[in-house]
Structure formats: C-alpha cells, structure tokens
Amino acid sequence: MPLYEYECLDCGPFTELRPMADSALPCPCPDCGGDAPRAYLTAPMMACVGTERRIALETNERSQHNPMSVGEYAAKQAAKSHRAGCSCCTTTKKKKSATAKTPSGAKSFPSKRPWMISH
Image (cartoon, rainbow, N blue to C red; front, side, top):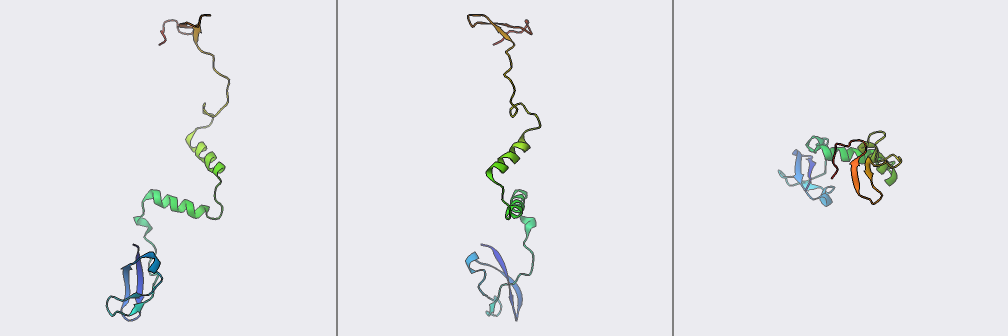
C-alpha cells in the first residue's frame, strides 16, 4: 500500500498507509480524530526508485504522446546491437570454401593452408 500525506486543519500534516482506492477520501487524524483532506506536500521520492525502473518511467513519459510502432522499436534495437556493416545484416555473396573437395565429395587439405588438417 502507498504512503499518502494528509493535512489536519487543527493538528497539521501527517502520513498514512492506505489502499489506492481510498487515497482521495479524507483520512481520520491520528491526534484529534477529525477528517483530514489529502495534501500534496512533498514531491514523489524518485530517488528511491531503481535505475531500470526510473529509465522505464522516463521512456513511458516521453512516448505517451507519440508511441513507437513495433517496426520502429525493432529498428532501434537492431541499431543498438549491431555495428555499421556487420556481416549478419548485410547481404553478401556466399563465400567459397577454402577446403578443396574431390569429385566424390571427400575433403582434402585446404587449398590455402595445406599444412592444416580439417576436422
């Protein structure tokens, strides 16, 4: 349950742990028992929120007016994970194998390095 601030007109401000459904309702003052309306006295404590959650909240706040499409998100993620001209994203011709093969399909020594035995 969240912690909300209320301000009694006679006793002053106090905080109370209440369900979110009851946050807008007046809360009984712990000192005098009178109904105290909710007050916004301090800013939310964002310093206590973890870095990952804070970044997610900032991202959601920025995108509330113009959310990214699935295609835009995929392109952004692809741009982050690959450097320019990476081999998996470019379409190139298939490399010719360096291992020489006989007409029967048996492998022989590589043509470029005859001293190396392939496995």
